[in-house]
Image 1 (cartoon, helix red, strand yellow):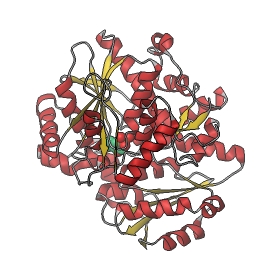
Image 2 (tube, protein in one colour):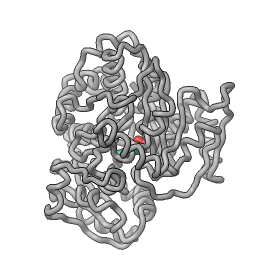
Image 3 (cartoon, protein in one colour):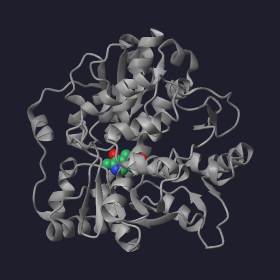
Image 4 (cartoon, protein in one colour):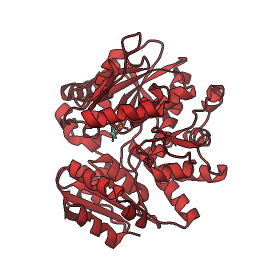
Amino acid sequence: MNYISTRGRTPPMGFQDAVLTGLAPDGGLLIPTDIPRVEDRLDAWSRLSYQDITFEILRLFVDLPDGDLRHLIERSYMAFRHPEIAPAWPVGPVHILELFHGPTLAFKDIALQFLSNFFEYILKRRDARLNILGATSGDTGSAAIHGVRGRERINIFIMHPRGRVAPLQERQMTAVLDSNVFNIAVEGTFDDCQRIMKTLFSDLEFKRRHALGAVNSVNWARVLVQIVYYFSAGLYVMQTTGAREVQFAVPTGNFGDVLAGYYAWRMGMPIRRLILATNENDILARFFESGVYSLGRVVPTLSPSMDIQVASNFERYLYYKGGGNPERLTALMKDFAATGSLSIPCGAGGRVDELFIPGVGTSADTLATIRRYDREYGYLLDPHTAVGVHVAEQHLDREAPTICLATAHPAKFSQAIREATGREAHHEILDNLAHAPTRCATLPADVEAVKSFIEERAR
Ligand SMILES: *Cc1c(COP(=O)(O)O)cnc(C)c1O
């Protein structure tokens, strides 16, 4: 399988280069040249383990020997605490797909554990080194750090805005003492961290000299690995309920997770609808309602990992929606860069796309849903998952069971849980962090300061 850019000005490349490249040099996102159809295999796949389904899907998209791919997959899911990796349970009117059994208790582990093992594998084969640079407001940074900690050929530098990350999320990052992990508390905002990161990545000489790599959600490997659970959970729920189709409810920020569901649908998984749920930062919900994608201001909510306005993976969807025309896509993205808004026509049904059902869960909806699921079903939802469940309940379908993606363990967001239920949510991993030693450098919000910090410590 080869990969091309949504903007059409990057020569095709294989999977390994696509993953190491991250963002395409022409500013676009890398996508596979075609999307394989797999409906003839679904029956057989419904009897496979999570790791075996992962193998069957990934081998369609990668340029690795089968044996190496199997080994990478086995290693990636060893760090998960549930034997099924991503189990699904019926809870009230929906099914909950638990994606939080990895080391940092959020769904990002599923992709970042694989990506880290993949990086190590490639670096060994190429006898190379990598310095990962990232900016985080929470979950991505800790999942990336836990993915690469202690690995020989990789150093990781993660910036977070000093004092502006939830204390627990900060400890999940800074309590990792491996010598290849560098936490940087930047005296500024998350936007300052992102600006510094973008400036350093656009300094091509610096980027090349230090082999800078990215782990953010535009990386194709992250989307690819997330396709798997739409198959594993969908086939499992179809089997246990006798349904011929399912629908998924996905709490969304960067459009990464739900994009993986879109690929699964394109590959032939019987998905009736994708219920796209946002919090008050509703740019994506508004788009799927009206066809207009226009920037708002980011407001802080109880589901901070979805407090995003520009959804970095959205460009991939727009590319397909526009019939795979890179010129048209480039023009749309230019519009958006210049005016903060773009629009596409709605279809005959009055919506942009019949596959996507948009909806919003506010902070009040989030708290009410957490409280109700706790009281009525004895199940604790984290606030991100609760946004998805709230919207899902308005679109239940008798013929297509609804699978709600549970993207974090409730104990990660204990303040919201306390507010909703009056109780504490615990997880021993998080409780143990309270007294763990930490390591973190503090730097001013200044490109030169971060640059020289990296220069002194890069591999
Ligand atoms: C990142 C994240 C999301 C949003 O996922 P996207 O792929 O950015 O849409 C939802 N919930 C949690 C807990 C997350 O960490």
